[in-house]
Image (tube, rainbow, N blue to C red; front, side, top):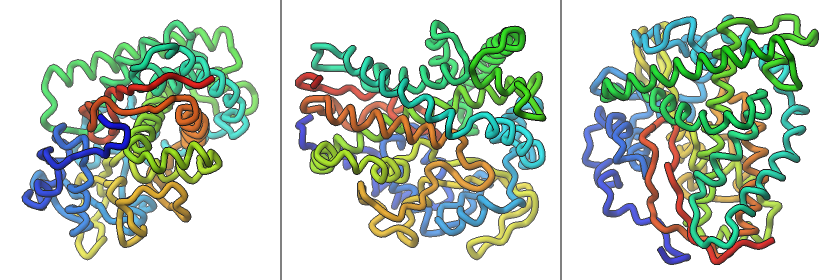
Length: 417
């Protein structure tokens, strides 16, 4: 693909014509279809014509910015999908993002007491050093996979260090994380084989973390698991399954979203050579630019909720017991809230997006994800000589809720020191 080429979605079956021809109550089913993964945004725009709409399967999809903002703070909307008849996860295995207060608050406060800004800042030197090592490892090659060689190993190493996972075990999480991410869509088309693979990964990861926590209880270290077990600074430490499921969430969510942020970020810049050149000349753009990347190509596209009562919103009523999709990525491109929302503006201010969610479930790891992206992306832009995509669009992971390329193969003329 030429260095100054732009992505061409015109031949893809999920482009604007498909969105226009799809009945409104089938649009979310189209979003779940893997064929739509490279460019779901025309489907989001079509849904925003009715910001609150019922789909053919009975799911309610909320796609407007104002409506999503209101519901993110509405206690009548539950994060526990059992309230909408979804029983994919047993109660004892639900992480804090699948719980409501007061259970949610107990788990979240325990994490926040230990996962402080000072802890995040203490990881900065490691992120910088690891970024240098991973780029150096490209060596004299002129072709590499950004996902496998940089975007994945960096956040995995960081979150494993934070939690106290031995370095030799890091590679085991790749398969577990990819498999468990598939379960986020609540997709009725998931095969029995896929469901069995999710259950197997869940069981294996649970057993591993339980053993790791037992070792940390016997021999505490300078890590987050040891801190969550209780070191005298927190009066309500986590124990048993609570600690296992919280650690599992931090481990999976702590790297999966950042992998996609780094990959989506480079993909967005490589599709816009003018902005990439500007960023190389003005590295101080990094803070607003990362925020714009989180708005424009968010890792988390939507979240499921359950209505605990009849909810009047957007000129309609969502009935009690309904499954509700908060289509965060659609809200972050709502023209009623953003000027030219379909355009990538690296210095966009203000930028009140939903890239890290909102309300009581606002992403705990947002400060760490921002820090990692703010370090990695400028170094990639500075050090890669004439980077270009080998294919656009690249292959995507099947998961719609947690969206990002499975691989991003780049060609370069070399690396700068």
